[in-house]
Length: 358
Image 1 (cartoon, rainbow, N blue to C red):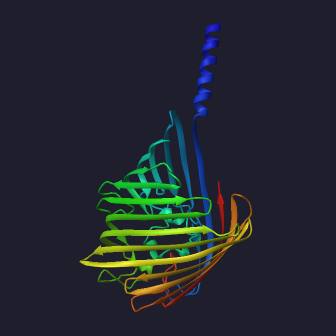
Image 2: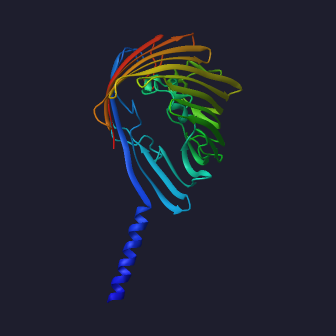
C-alpha cells in the first residue's frame, strides 16, 4: 500500500512539473465601428465596419519547454465578422494563421504552416495605421495583413536590437485561393528604447488583386470591372518604416512602400509614403494625426486622418476617427479602404467604435 502511495506521489509531482513547463492560452479581440461616408458608390452611407481598429479574432497558442533552451510552440488564429458572426473566409477556419514550430534561445525559431508575410512588421512603426481608412488602398502592400499558405519561416535571435526573418512558401500557397506560385519574404527589424525600424521584401508568384478597392478604373492595361478580382503573374512588395519616441508624450513616424504588379503583358505599381504623429494627452487618451500620399498607376490619392483613442481599461478602448481621401487623375477615384470608392474625387468618412481584448 505504501509503495502505491509513493508511486502516486511521484507521478503527481512529475505531472505538476510538466504542467509548469507548458502553457496553452485562449486569446482574442473584438472590434466594431459604425461609420458614415459622404459618398460610397454615389450616395452617402451609414454602415457597420468590423475590425476597424484591430482584426476581430480568437485564437489558441501554446508552448512546451523541452529543455536546454528548446521550446515547441504553436498558434491557431481565426478571424470572424462581429457584425454577423460569420467566418472571415468561408474556405478557411484558421484564416488568421495556423502554424507549429521549434524555438531555440541561441539559434532562433523555425515554423511551418500558414503565416502573415512580413509587411506586418512595418505596422508596429506606423502608429497612424490604427484604422482601416488609413491603410494603403486595397491593402496592396499587405500592411493590414497578407497571409501565406504552405510556408516555412525562420526568425533569428535578436542581436543588439536587430532581428532577421525569412520565409519560403511552396508553390500553390498564398493568401488567395487562386495563388499559383511560390512566395519568398524577408525582413530586418530593429528596436531600442526610442527607435523602431523595419524593412521588408516579398515576392508572390501568381495571386489575385481587386483594383476597385484601390479606386482604380484601369489595371495592367485592362478596363476594370467593378469588384472583379484579377489574376496577376506576380506581386512584389518592398517597404521600410521607422518611428521615434521624441518625448514620453510624442512619437513620430515615416514609412514608404512600393508594390509592383505584373500581368497581361503589363507592369503597374502602387507607391505609398506616410507621415504621422501620436500625442498622449494622458496615458489613457491619445490623438494620432496622419498623412499618406499614394501613387496608384497613373493616378494619385492623398489621405488625411485623425484618430482619438480613449482607453477605458487595459483591455478596452473607445475611439473616433475621421478621414479624407482626395484623388487626382482620370483613372482614379477616391477610396477609403474598405468602403466602396466615391463617385467623385473626394471621400470623407467618420467612424466611432469599441475594441476589447480578452
